[in-house]
Image 1 (cartoon, rainbow, N blue to C red):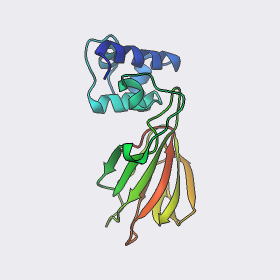
Image 2 (image 1 turned 90 degrees about the vertical axis):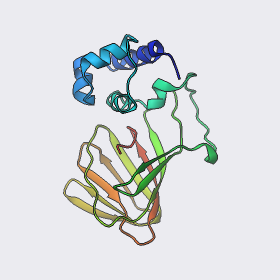
Image 3 (image 1 turned 30 degrees about the vertical axis):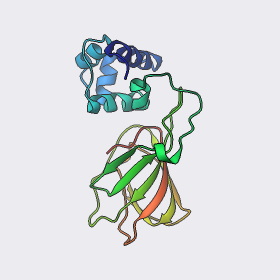
Length: 185
């Protein structure tokens, strides 16, 4: 993990490259501009939650800020190296298919969905996302529309729309998920 100073430099560079003020980052991320300024100046380290919010607001992966070495232009990820994120409410497990690339905007995951008894809460955030079912069926709600996705079906939408993806099928489902921001769990 880089030093506090290096992490702060990376954060400030990402913010200024997007032409954002500290106040604009506060609005986008929910992290106070005072705290963000302290992180940028190497005075404090962010919590994991704060770093995830800042990364999403700046449309970067969290790995962009915490990897020790610079990120390459190409990422090869053997199956055994995947990290996973779990959302208990939706029954979704996101296994990273890439650690990210330099200046990259996309995040993509293999998603395993276990059946849930009730519809999970809705999420909204910046960016866009798409999902393609490769096994089973998935339920999706985007805005006021409901979709039943079967093998080979895909869905692409703006993440600012309230949305939920889950499986009520007895056997669950698998899908490939791509988004311009890391999954919001």
